[in-house]
Length: 208
Image (tube, rainbow, N blue to C red; front, side, top):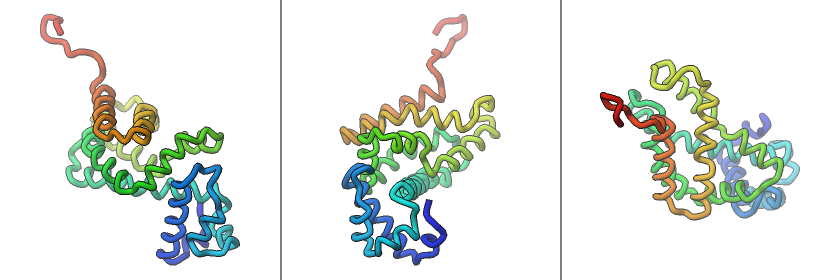
């Protein structure tokens, strides 16, 4: 992650470096991205780059973290609107807004597409560990567990991992097809099955 020197930079300069990195990582896969291009677009000396980041990997992880924070804000806005709703209810409502946010940030979409095109060890490890919002989402699930809305015998991290494994291929489908409605419908169906289960409701007398 960035050094303390980077965090002490003026906000405008940090944003300029972030935008330069986003542009380069959207333009090509991580392995092909050029630090020279990033420092050129950010208008900083190459030597300064290494005062801010240990290397390209460090910068990439920082970019993913910042994007995850932005996405979490979209979800959190729905949580704030009605704190009585559970995790799955809010997530279902937030999904369309998250896709709108993604469409409004086309370069974020391209970074996501480059990620699924990259089969390197670094990228596989990065995808398995992301995202920066993981801790916050886990906390939300744990709060629902305390309220009795989600079973408590399953760790929140496991629930979040399950959600990510279910939706990951659908997100890849979205990046490839851009068929937003179809992907949203599938995600909502997956969440409905995950939350309510596959077992048919039993009526009195044992009939379904």
